[in-house]
Structures are given as C-alpha cells and as structure tokens.
Length: 329
Image (tube, rainbow, N blue to C red; front, top):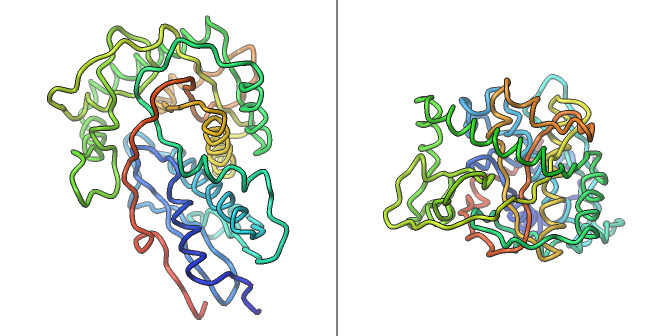
C-alpha cells in the first residue's frame, strides 16, 4: 500500500495541536504512532500515565484521548487534510484507541478548521466568572456541538444545579478521607518551575473560594501554595452535563471528542470554561449527577462556562515524547 500521509513536519504540527487537549490532572495519557507503510496515524492510550485511584476503569483516560483525537481532526482540517477516523479498530488491542487516515488534497471540514484559533486559545479557568447570563443562542450552539459528535449536553435547572454542586462538595469530602487518592492527586501537582511538561501548575489552581458551591476542583487541597489568595465565585455557576447513551470505551472516546468540541465552541464564542469530574469518580455518586428531566444517559463530564478571566496555560509534553514514527510497519 502506498502511504498517503503528509510530510513529517506536518504530522508533527498536527500532533502538537492534538496534545493541547484537556486531560485529567493534565496527565496527557496519549501516544501517537505514525505508520508510513499503512498510511495511518494511530492514537494509543498510555497506561503509564493513568490515574488509577480516581479513574480505575480508565474512563477519564479515554475522554482525554478522545479530546486529543478531536484536536487532531481540527488541526488536520486547518491544514487542508481530510481525516478519516476509525475508533477501536483492533478488538485484540484495546489500547489502540483510533486510527486516522490523513489525505492531502481531500475534503477537509471547514467548520472544524474554523475552530483552530480556539484550540490555540483555550485554557481551563479555575477563577471566578462574572454573574452574567450566557445568551440562549450561545448555549444552543454548545448543545449543537455535542450533538455533532453523537453526544448530548444538558443544561440543568437551578434545582439540579444545586444538587450537582452539593455532589461536588460530597466528593471533595470523600477525597479528604482517602489517603491514596490524596497522594495520587498531589503527585500531579506542579510548582510551575522550568522544565515541567505535565500536571497542573500552581498558577492554574485559581484562588481559594469563599463559601461553597463553585463547582471547581480545588487542587490547592493537595498542594499548599503560600499567598494564594481567595475570591468570591459566582453565586450559581452555569454548568452543563455532557452525556452519552452507552458507557463503554467507544462512548468515552466519543464523549472526549464532544467535550473538546464544546470547549472550543465556547472559546470561539467568548466564553471561558472549566471542568469537574469529582462526583463522577465515585460509583455511588455518579448516577445522581444525571438530570432526571433531561435523559442524558451516562454523564461523562460536568462543564462550567461563563464570562471571566482565561486560565493560564498548563505545560505540554514535547512532541518527541508523544509521537513514534515507524517507517517499515
């Protein structure tokens, strides 16, 4: 078979964009394998970067890799490439999450290409948002973004929003009582020094919240930061629940793509976002996150959105660490 892959410099740029994806604790649990002989770029999950206490089934790991896959699709479209993706192409190799065939001169998706500036600009913001309502048309656009990836984004009413925020607090208390989980989270916290390529830097923790109910994971509980400061967060955060019908690896990969598409659509529309999966990490809490009025199926992520300061950029691993080139296979 004659390879149709673009040149290596282009592939490196694509992977660099893909690696901007969000992932649990910024663990970046992905690895790309360029196969010249078959003309494919494979996406593999990196079990060595798993978070086993908080994510024993590797659901969040799949979400992060799905988000990276969507970033690859956006970057490919911007480069004028078509990107045909097959999820879980080898049943005997469950860590081969996807194979992408990149075709120069194909028919790239213009709507994806238009999200490239948002991909470069998006950061998670754990800072207070303004108490300013997001227009319904923008929220509808976020819902549509999820639907384009086969998922559903539900916006809970005030009652269920309060329920979810209470569940976040419950999950925090459970974390405080679990020494193994606390140690695992602390292992991914970073001081912001030179040379750090993963984890959550202290500058991205945001301020200590005054009161309760912000819906933001407080990484400062795992790593003390002197003079961090405090702030009053929005009275009732605007949140949305990203859900899927099923709850297996393929669903998680689709949810990761939908999550990144929603985040980029929000960024393009002038919003800032953060995510929390804390109540989803406890089997006894996760079913109660689901909005009984919306029928979201299985909730995969809680997204907070609104207007406010963009978060600082978190570090990213160099492409040389996440891309392997196989010439003969």
